[in-house]
Amino acid sequence: MIKLKQLNNSCEACDTCLAPNFSVFNCLTDDEIAQLKMEHSDLSFRYGELIFKEKQLPAGIYIITKGKVKVSKSGFEGREQIVRFAKEYDLLGYRALLSNDRFSCSASAISATEVCFFPKDLIFRLIENNSKLALRFIKILADDTRNAEEKATHMAQKTVRERVAESILILKEVYGFEEDGNTINANLKRDEFAGLAGTVRETATRFLSELHSDKIICIEGKKIRILDLQKLERSANPTY
Image 1 (cartoon, rainbow, N blue to C red):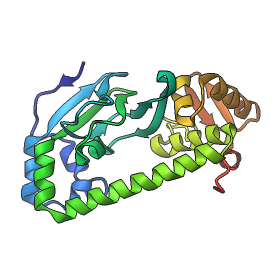
Image 2: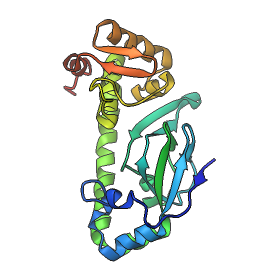
Image 3: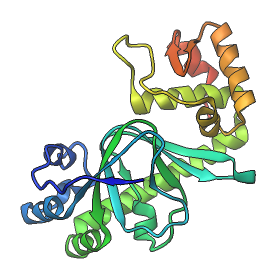
Image 4: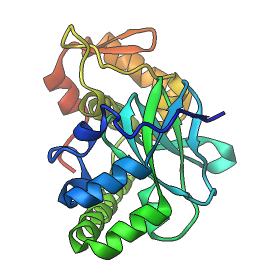
């Protein structure tokens, strides 16, 4: 169940979320930013809870202020296909909202997660009054299209081992390392990792074990520690 925290107009995360380096909203005027702060809601989710569900109608958009989220789609025979992972300050739910369509994917927390929710009416009002914000969303949607094309090419042309290696690199880029500088700062079930790599659990586990045996990575429970980054990058075959 979604847990709605009390509206907090002086949320400590606001200034960070709206900072120039992070936010699509950094083109807004002071008055428009004040509207965002006034009309947002703070939501918190436990591990495994849905933020929004595939085929639901969007009520607004979300910015992650703490935690990690997976965005996934139900595939053949109900098998989960992970579209991407999201982290702090990433934006969620905007494509369905802007296209006035239902969510094509689900978003769920893979750690204790907090998000800021901005209602639909507020977002449309800001877009209508601020052409720079409209252009920002157009650019985001264009980037999404390019990324989807690249992912489709990789799925078609790369081997499963290459996709598994690439998925580890994606996790590194999204979540970074723990304090040791080698262990990826994410805990994923094998089914979740397989969904990211576009394969089944058994196959993903086999190729993870191969990379482990080759001393490219070290598997420790749900944790992945990179032992040889250059070999891992070569295994991902970045030439496509």
